[in-house]
Length: 285
Ligand SMILES: [Zn+2]
Image (spheres, rainbow, N blue to C red):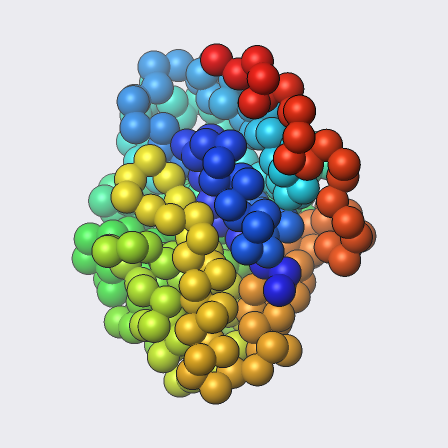
């Protein structure tokens, strides 16, 4: 089984996670830029972070046979902080990089005007750069936040096929299914969606334009829940082709619109350096 996790924050994960992910079939992932927990105090700290998403994390992932891509953006929460918003002017420099396959995460956190301005401005950047956009839907007041997000997407004029609305659930997927946007589901151990609930959604709405991610970050999360969802799909009557579509071909199709995904080499043997003697295990601090 091959798995492409379309939304996972590896910055917050250990090398053991990379190893375990590879063992269950994860061969590629997209790491969107997000809030790091500690508020940033200047745009410079964003550029250091973006540089690590372009350099250090892909290197770390490659040690474990996983291809690492990223999405770059000013996240919704920090769109409210005037110390951070000047980073919007720096984004174009990053959106031309080879492994940047989307603009994201963007969208609403609490639903302020400042968030909406940053959201709209970044959709415009996605259009200008011919990139897909990864839209985070808010955790509170999700139904209204999702509807507002769809309005901002529509107003931007971006092709809805270039947009994924993420962190959806049973309450919000119905509003998105007819929009032409892609639908993302974050599977968590005890909040948001479980594997079984995602499978129910897939039975009801089909597998087209569906993306499943673990979103794993610093909170209680599990980078192997993509695999658990795949197994739940099989147990509920989906076949291996359905699983491959949701777990691999859909994310490849969505992010492939960037023109920056490398050819699929997932059938090949991983590099010899995969488990033994990598420099991180030896010299990491
Ligand atoms: Zn995220």
